[in-house]
Structure formats: structure tokens, C-alpha cells
Image (cartoon, rainbow, N blue to C red; front, side, top):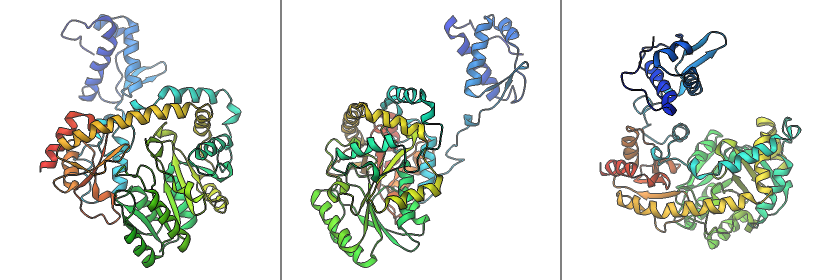
Length: 465
């Protein structure tokens, strides 16, 4: 039995929502237990004095949200949705030391931008959902094009479009040198599987994106950090590390370095390439944020002509993270080996998302859209730098570009992150961004999250200790 509300009925257009909220509240409170049959449509309509259409709409709302189950011929039954009890800080404590997989898992669960200053994505509201939806509708009309496995190297139409896109930034325009992947994450894993053996040394930027540290270490690599000093690696340190370790490869970024937002200077880029040529070291270039740069430098793969550089890209940061469309542009000698690795890892990559991206690239829509997105990110960054400084953090100079501000706080950033997590706020402490895991007062802050005043207030309080 559901009692009538003890107050006048809400306006007609709001009655279904009010009834759904009332029923949900009873399920959440345990008054109606999961599995119990809910009142019939007629019974609720009579008790609430509303139409049966209103009750049906209320039940539709509950069912869509996972709070009710419709059983044909038997009515509606209460249930507790699996997402109704997200992990709380006390139930999912932040590790006391660097834990990249924990942070990524927490980031994927935390969809609210103003609760995730440590997140790595552009806010969904900044993306063009209409562009993505139109592309999916376009490819859905030709079912024969995407119901099969497709080619191991990737959808030909996408590889051709990617060849043209890469050609615009000086990388050889050849679809035969492109292999699609499930995001740049799989791209790096395929490259590591093809080139890195247990015990090999791999150089990475320090600070640098943390997930590859764990990926490479899981393959048995000896991961060594190269100090990043604003416009690229510390060249003296790089020379010394190469001479000492004879590394198999160096993972770095030319445009929009993660986490600092810096660019690799042309002088340092040429020095890195000469070192690679002289020692036989491979260069893996992570370019997943490159499309968001207002003033991008030449890519290493463009300067090198895909000789010793392997270029990784993705559309997860600009189009749709869930599509997981990434790609590798590789020297011709490596392409068969990488395709074989991809076949062994999962045969092919999903065709629908690849065809959708291909259609967006083919008609020029992506170029126009990403220009608007780039402007929005740049404006948000300008505002964020001031807000972050007002919260007691000192942004790195020069300020850089893109989605992230690398800023120094007053206490250990791991302590700040743990305090914020108690309030359900996800931060990215600096220790994560070094393969050594050394304590750090630095923190990566997403510029979109930094626009939320309550969040900045919480960060400022945690930063004061």
C-alpha cells in the first residue's frame, strides 16, 4: 500500500516525477524490499488521484533508472539498481602510495566533472554529441559494412582518413602505415609487446602519464624516468641514461605533454632523434591530446618521417571516450608485426565506431568541431590558472596549454588527495606521475573542474593542511 502524499498534488506535468521519487524513496529506505510486488497501476491511480497514464509514466521512470522491473502479465516489482550505491571514500580508500590502476578505475566511476579535478577527460558537455549521433546514424544504414569482423589492420576508410589527417601535420600520408587500436592504451600495449622483452629498459618522461608506467612494468620492463623540464627532457640526463641503460625505447610527447601541458622544443626534438638514430633506440610518441593544442610544435614522427618514431593517437579525448578509437602510425617494417600482435590480442577492433570516426573525418566536420573545442579549452585554462593560484597552488611556468595545469601545493599532494577523497573528490597527486613514486607537492588539475568554486574551496582547505 502506498499512502497518498500528505500535501497537495504537484502540478500536472510534475506528478509522474513526484510519484516515481516517492516510490524510489520507499525502496531506498527499505520499506519496500527488492523483489516485492509494487501496487498495480489502477491502485496507485486511485490512491494518488491521478490518471493511469501518469502512473505508467512513473513506473517507466523507475524501470529506466533500475528501481523497478516490469514482468509481463505480473506487474512491476521493486529492485535495487547496481549503481545506486557508488563506492564511498571509506569503502574504497585511496592507497597510501601511487596506484595508477586505482586512480583510473576511480576516474571512470566519477562522471561529475566538479568531483574529479584529477580526471583526464574533456567534460561530456563540451563534446558534440550531435556530431557523434549523426555519424552513428549514417553508418547504421549500411549494415553489411559493420556486421562482420573487418580487417585486422583496421577499417580501410578510417585508415585512409587518418593518413590524410596525419599528412596535415607532416607525418607520411600512407594508410598502409596505420593500424587502428582500442584507444592509445592498446596501441602502446601492442608496441610494447612487439618491441620490449622482460629486462629491457624503457625511458619515460618524469613527470609523465602514469598508466604506461604500469603497462610497461607489467611486461617486465625496467621503467626509468627522464626529467622533463618545461620544453622537453633534460638533455644531459637523457644522454647519461641512454649511455648507462641502452634503452629499448623512449616514450615521450611532443605536443601537450601530460601532465605539464608543455611542448617539446624543436631543438630538443632534433637532439632526441639524433640520439635515437645513433643508439638504435625506438621513440614512441604519445599524441592523444595533440588536437587540443592552439600552438602545436612539429611532431617527432613528422621530423623523423616514421623512421624510428612510432606515433600514437586517439579520439577518446575529442569525440567519444567510449568509442575507444585509437591508432598507431608506424615505420613500414613494424606494421606486419603490430598487425600480428593485434590479431593475437583480439583479432580486430570494433567496426561501428571506426566507421563513425571515418565519416566524421571524411566530410571535414572534425576539423571545424575540434577548432571550437580547442578555443573552449583555451578559455577555460585562462580562468583556471587564476582560480588555482587563488586556491594556494602555484602553476608551473611557463603555463603551457590544454586540459591540465601542473601545480605545486603547500603539502604532500598525496595527503591533499586523501583529504579530498574523504569528500568524494578525486585528485591526481604528483607521485603518480613519476615512475619512482617519490613524494611530491605537485598535482595535475583538470581545467574544467577548476571552474567550480566549491571544488576549489575544498582543494584550498585540503592544501592548507
